[in-house]
Image 1 (cartoon, rainbow, N blue to C red):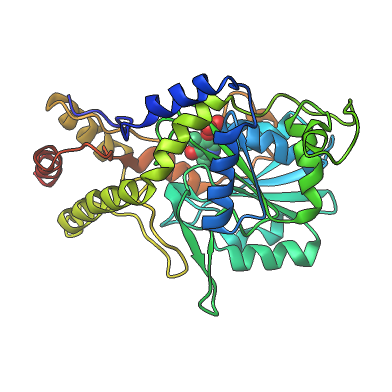
Image 2: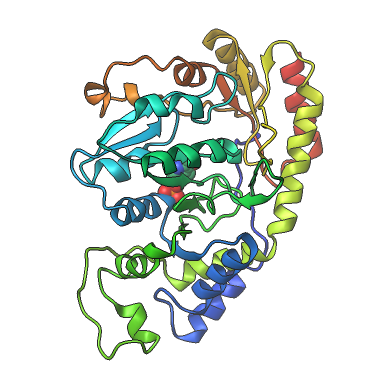
Length: 373
Ligand SMILES: *Cc1c(COP(=O)(O)O)cnc(C)c1O
């Protein structure tokens, strides 16, 4: 069976875990955690990075930092993972779902402004497949209405937004805060894991406190205060050094991992682009491609089902993706009834192909042949 995903190991993960264990310090915020955080800050220009136990946790930290309260309205795309909405629902917020573009699952920036009311507090964007949302437009809207922008960059490591003046900024470094995932299905992994990125300095001190169970422990260990105690809300959001040690091994190979994924992505694109049976991912002029995902968009759910079955019969696992959140069992009776046709269309017609580091040339050729047949 050619699986949909296979976690990639660089070979150094267990070595660094052994180092962490041997050091005698395996709880959070040790040497490996700090090395990983500094790596991300230096390479991508985030003002502050805090590793977390998942992207879901990083999003929960964002919701707390943004002071989201009962009845605040948060604009979120419907075509996304549950966690994007869940973090804000837990704070009592009302989710206002936005539709995607018709040729790209990202939030349609031109449809955001009409959803804003005096209760709107934040816009949460999701860079689907690691491809940037239209951040220049979205930040302009947010500034006009004084809204907080949170980037769900779970899939967006090593991907960038290109501004109209030609400057480039890493995804997760443009909004007020961002959240990344190192779940085993992402480009860079630690089993479960994630990080919070903070770009507006005013959130940094409080973020450290929320990260460490509502205490000012980080400040204490830097010698900035004499004793530490309970000063705010929070949780245990920080990962152990065992997780960070694993992640460090991945970071050492980041360039190599990205190069390989892009090669595989380009082979799919080159060999499938002339097939009239579906369309391929669009990378807007303002976005880069981190090869997180390769997908096909069919004209109907029937076409998609036919291909899934044909691939399965030939031992290839291809999978569809999100179910629109506005129609979910948990939230549909709180949705305001608007129809989000593009989100629903991706729910029915988008299919993801196997894309992982060890996918062999022969296996990829087989997948392409089956699809083109
Ligand atoms: C993977 C993913 C998440 C959740 O990440 P975890 O690290 O598993 O919590 C959230 N949002 C999006 C868009 C994702 O792809």
